[in-house]
Structures are given as C-alpha cells and as structure tokens.
Image (tube, rainbow, N blue to C red; front, side, top):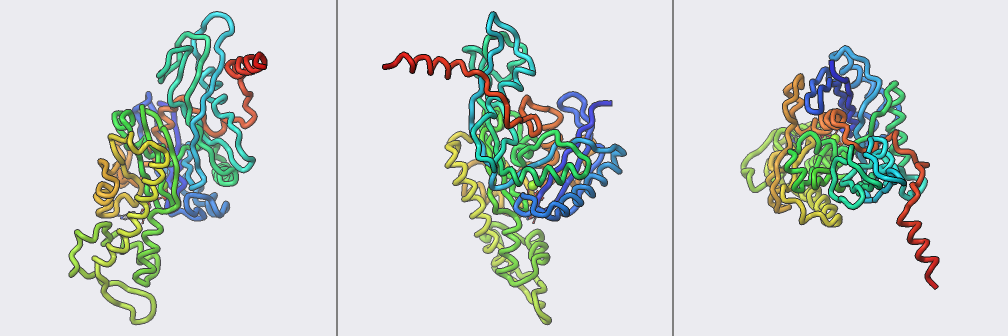
Length: 412
Ligand SMILES: Nc1ncnc2c1ncn2[C@@H]1O[C@H](COP(=O)(O)OP(=O)(O)OP(=O)(O)O)[C@@H](O)[C@H]1O
Ligand SMILES: [Mg+2]
C-alpha cells in the first residue's frame, strides 16, 4: 500500500474533501470523496468559524466513510483578494571549505532564506515556491539535489496573505483534528490538475472562476510564476440575474446554470423561458436573450479584471499557451468563446483528468482545485509550505551584503 494523502478545498460554494493513495509521483487512486454546500465562507474567506468548522467536518466524514480511513493531515486550498505574490532571492552557503552536494535540508534552508521578507504584522507567508535554483555560477537549475557546489541560490515566489484570514481557516481545519500539510493557492492547485507540462513550460494562465473568487495563477518555465485573486465570480453573475429579473437568488442560480449564456449573439431573441418571480401571481416568461445580456456584462467584467491583473504583472506577452479556465463558472455556456474573443489568446476549459477511483461527476472543472491539491501532495514539489515557514527564520549571513558593506567602508 502506498502513502495516503488528503485534500480539502474550502470554497465559497462548496467544501470538498478527497482521500487518495499515492504510489510514486504519478499514480493516484482516489479512495474517498465528500462534498457539502459551503457555509460561512464569503469571497473565498472564512467569515464564520463555527459554520466552516462543521461543514469541513461533514465533508471529511463523508470522505472518511467511503475510504474507511481516518484523516489526520490534509493539503488545504487557500484564496482571497488579499493574496499577493512577490519574487525574492535566497542564498545559503553549502560549505565554507571545498564543495559538497546539495541536500534536501539545503533546499529548505535556501527557501527559508527567500521567505524572510519584511511584512507588516497583519500579513504572513503561506507558500514559498522555487522558480529556479543556482549552484555557484550555474544558473537555470530546476533540481539542485545532489549537485556539487559552494553556494546555493534560489529565485523564489513568496506568497503572502492576511494573517487573520489564514488563522481563521487554520482554526477551522484544526478544530476537526486535522493538521495542515500545506496551504496551496487555489489557482496553483487547479493548475496542477489540468495543465500539461508543455503549457506550464511555455507560459499559461489558469483562471479558476469559482463562486466567490476568480483565482489566477501564471505558470512559466515549469513553475508557478505569479498569482492573484479577484473577488468577482459566479455569485455575482447569479446576483445580477436575481436583481435584473427580480427573482430569488436560488431561482436565478438555477436559471443561470440551465439557460444562461455569456454571448447573447448566439441566443435567439425569440426564445423565452417560464419563471417564477417574487409576489403572488408572479409566473411570467423572460427572454433568454435578455438573460444572456445580463450575464455577458458581468462575464466581461470578470475577464477584464483578470486581464488587467495579468497586464499589471507584466507577463501578458509571455503566455503562448493562453488561458485555461477552471472552476464552476467556466461551465457557463459561451464563457470560453467570450474569453477567446476578449483576451485574444488561445482558451480552453480545463477538465479534471481521469484518476483511478474518481467518480465521473468529479471530472468537471469545478473539482480542479481539490484534485490539484492531491497532485500537489503526491508530487510534494520542493516548496516551502505553511507550517514549515517560520517568521523568525534566521537570515543567512549574506556574503554579497557583507562584501557590499566592506566596499562601502572603503569609500570616502
Ligand atoms: N453550468 C454552469 N453554468 C454556469 N455557472 C455554473 C455552472 N455550474 C456551476 N456554476 C457556478 O459555479 C460556481 C461554483 O464554482 P466552484 O465550485 O468552482 O466554486 P467554489 O470553489 O465553491 O468557490 P470559490 O473558489 O470562488 O471560493 C457557482 O457560482 C455556480 O453558479
Ligand atoms: Mg474554488
């Protein structure tokens, strides 16, 4: 029997748990799944600890029952508009005399060194991911383990978030007796599930358009390169329909999923749908074309917001593989084509790959995050995860900094 790992995706619409067995890096067998409608999460952030704690407990209990395994640790998804990523470099000395080979401990140390950035007390580091390593003068190294050298350097991506948001989520998970193996950004997790190695290498942006957040992760040269999240997603599409057509949210949601379209130009102006609105004699018909107009306006806003964020990062010209859409809202009819027209890059929908034991309905792009968490856990890329990151991580003696001081002292 291989190792057992668990994933927990705490979304705005649903909370999903999965348990899998890992053999090697690639062979995952899903043993149990659990899913409950989300409670106490708003725009990707915990707003009610009790509600989220009990919803997590239910989702995990379902997965545990099918797998017949008790979950003690899990990889947990994280999101929120307060998430930021900054590139930073780290450096450690391998050996002051002679060379020696790089160990896993050195990789952890150098990532710890890269994580030591100055942050206000209300923010903390949740992940530090290597983009590229350098051993002495040799640059562009992906796998430094076993290489000989004097010095190991890393060009890393440091992901930070609001401390309150992190602590609240951690509390909800731990209250269920579950330790956190790592907090993984939703966009990165989704990318792990749906991207091909070639896309990750060439340059691609994952847009996970969920219920309360749209998570963006840019992958380049095989690694996550930049991440951010916006607070506009599926819930806003539903809310616009409810307001525009004066109906309860639950009905607007059902109407959106069943008859919605993001491109009114493909919907006949003569097509009508019977709906119930507010009030007593509220049975009426609405134009499907009008419904599509409402959805198009908000879908365009989501895409424009995301593109503005990508442009601001400066990576908009480095995405030959274009955009891959995941999350429940990626399933809105016409959304992919709208994205293609609006962003003028190749766009595809990222369906979850076939994993042994994964029930058919979990292949929807809605489950990219939870499956991606499992893949992340199986691969355990040499990254620093939440729990490993110590805010008091010792600053490695910076040789270059010291030399700089020495030179400065010589100056008049
Ligand atoms: N066929 C469909 N057409 C349009 N929208 C859909 C469809 N199916 C699901 N959705 C929307 O997808 C959203 C849920 O997506 P998802 O499960 O990815 O969100 P989440 O992970 O719970 O939330 P988040 O990641 O934003 O915190 C809901 O807003 C729902 O209306
Ligand atoms: Mg989600």
